[in-house]
Image (cartoon, rainbow, N blue to C red):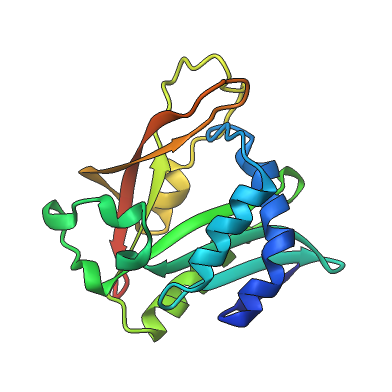
Length: 195
């Protein structure tokens, strides 16, 4: 497994591969996202221009099997809608860990930790004091929740992140099998980077 960090124009070169990976992984629980490569490419081209944007990839034999992104909190359209006034984080000193996707066969092998390590190291090098991300809220009895779905909260808590009660954002997307987009609520998690 090769973990690599990409910035600037290096991100742009990887957008086609990254778009396909995101569509595949985000179709799964808990996102259930009915997306397209064209939508993903449009989003990623915008993301690549954000201040301090970073892409971390995991590859096997030159095939990207996972990726994680991050940028300045104040430059991510969906993230910056969240009100951090109830959290101990200054928006201009906060890094946003945007997305993390990994094909199922490679989960449970430490790649998630490598993704967080690389993004947090990048954030600290850029002068950020804190790191946040958000996760979609789905009801525990959702009909598409797979048996044995792994809760990620213990993993996040093990990395020092804490749920930021009352700090949320919303995003609209079309769930698999639905005809129209619906509003989803995502809850933020955060940590100080000097602890």
